[in-house]
Amino acid sequence: MVFSSDPVVSVSNASIFQGIHTVLSDLNFSIEKGEFVFLIGRTGSGKSSLLKTLYADLPLIMGDAYISGYQLNGITQKNIPFLRRKLGIVFQDFQLFPDRSVAENLHFVMRATGWKDKTKMKSRMIEVLMGVGLGGASNKFPHQLSGGEQQRVVIARALLNEPSILLADEPTGNLDPEVSDGIFKLFQEINKRGTAILMATHNYELLKKYPYRILKCENGRLLDSKTTKFQIGQDWAL
Picture: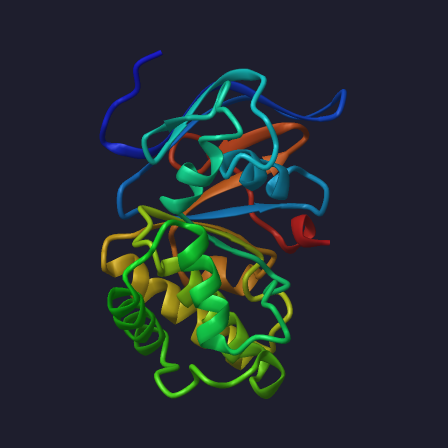
């Protein structure tokens, strides 16, 4: 199948499986360059499985999906690292190396994704840390940072390779409301600079406050606020 070169994500007639269990079926949606999209649904409804499929942690065995220039159906293990260089992935639980400084955490990712020039690496690290408000934190270790600061490091790490899209799985789930608001505003700033964002969230207040497009996992299907009217209530977050 040939997809438009415009969307950063395009999914057609796809189904997602965990083992033999169908998690989501008949997925048809796209995400345009620079678009901000919320991904919602009850726990276990398929949000994380969808994100894992998009960054090729779960294989796509039915349907077609394209993300950042890569076809996910049949992608080889050899090509997965190249795909992930074009994506930014932000996890709820940070996944920082506790025994390495902020700079060393970022350096590890840069080396793993093909960076070799030390001068360019240092310049890019400074640039992304400044961009998330942590210009003076390069020599600190994760335990010396607050939860919000650690999440900012994770976001900086995700931005190192100038991704076309950020995939964020509950990025404010473990943070208090004030810190969460600051992290979300940072995502908005990144989005305004042209990076598409797909953000899974249970934060109902964000949906009320910011009228972005919503994808909702429900009963094995994916509903899209762009094409389908559906109710959003606090019940889906329970």
